[in-house]
Image 1: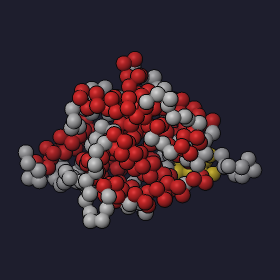
Image 2: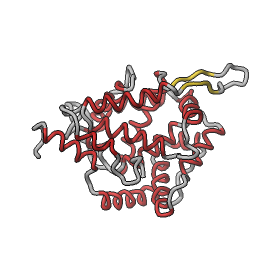
Image 3: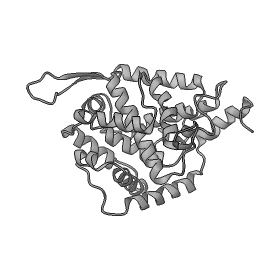
Image 4: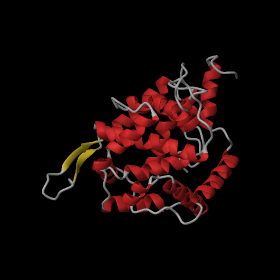
Length: 291
């Protein structure tokens, strides 16, 4: 559903087996552990919901995407970049980052300022604050989902928690997209998220985007599991962000039901993703991982 290919294994996944180095991360890293887990499905939805709160990010989606016709298309594109960056060789990651950067180069325009008296605010997807916002909300969503439905994250440097290790390692992803000062600890991530508070707001375009994100035109069998995962994503949000978005924590046991959906998804798809297997194939070919 989120791979961008109806058969579940698009061509870009095969490219993860290509290349001649270990990539930016590897087996045993916090990034492999978190980004390779089933909870990232919910994290992706949560991140897109959160992204709408930044007027620049929302303007980019509203003006330059087909979210009304394909509300999950942007999520599929983001999944492609996250998975490739996590498991690919540096060369493969470079190609993927260039692809995304070319798309972002065209995303620019203006959005209404907070006051009717002010001139419209110009934005570009390459602006530092927008790159930072996207990186921060995805990092926060990955951690929130894993904290709720995953297991312990490997600690990869002395004096860190598992979440610290993840934030520090995944800072590389932000740098690849041009972010100059990504957060490198859980505390820095929280501080960076809170610093955006005065900028965030919800308007009619946000409400429209939320309708498509929470109730996309999915095939019948996928609607209930997706609705449950949306409920799980909303349940993991801080109350202030739910309030800004006009969302309420589900009255039903969203956390438990999402856990059941994720368990079933893992049972059907397997505990190890195709992307991770392709990465292991590359590492085995290079003699960096047992074949």
